[in-house]
Image (cartoon, rainbow, N blue to C red; front, side, top):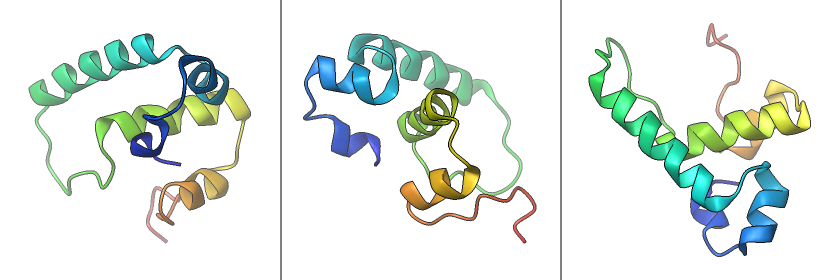
Length: 84
């Protein structure tokens, strides 16, 4: 499930889903976006927004999901770092 699908969740449901309150999640996204703008990025840009990257990380930490399951949940991306 991507971040756009969580926008309509209540605050309690949002926290239950990813482990942090919606307001804290928004603050975390702001910090990550500021850090992202200062990075020099050689290579291909990410397919996921910063909010989706954060959501993916929180889901992984909260649920101890396998990378296969996380990748399938975020649009079937290849979860292997090497691309193989």
